[in-house]
Amino acid sequence: MNGSDLPLEHGYPLRGIVPGWYGMDSVKWLTRIEALDHSDTGLFMTERYVTIRLQAVGSDQRPITGMQVKSLITEPREGQFLTKGRQTIRGAAWAGENGVARVEVSTDGGQEWALATLDKDIGMYCWVLWTYPWAPRDSGSYTIAARATDDHGNTQPASRDALRIDGYEMSWYHPSDAR
Image 1 (tube, rainbow, N blue to C red):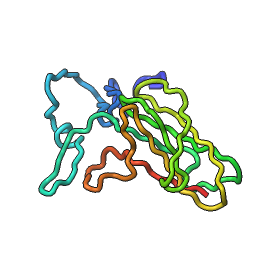
Image 2: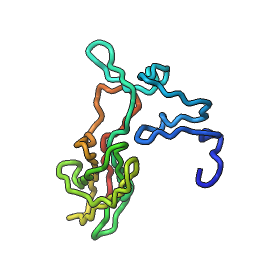
Image 3: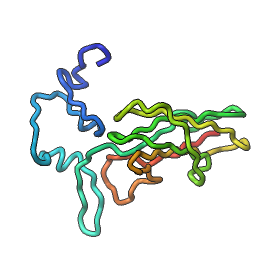
């Protein structure tokens, strides 16, 4: 890791990295690898690493698989006071095994959206950096949001499914306030 042996807390001596899947699937402290010709029916894939969506009766549980499209704003930070004049909103987006097709930015809490400029996509499983030039019309508080769409047409939702009760796939876009 970074030119050194993998530390114990990160899985020494060996850690399996599963490109395009969430980090909990990147298993630490491997002792063996087994290839299956069927879906994994072990505890973690059937009871732990699952999405849980409430139904009228009971719940629908499914294993978590590939990453969903997501973006985040890195600048300005939440609650940051901005200087007057032109600003650059910056962030990153990713889509697991899919490519990032576009990122849109809103400076009015999600009412109107404009395309951001994507940096060069360096390949599958990588973050794509993006920028959006912005000149606020007036002084005051602004709610900025960014949403990404992958090359299969999947777009970040505005909110989480209210019937989901698990703690996984937090992929909806999160507005940020700047002044």
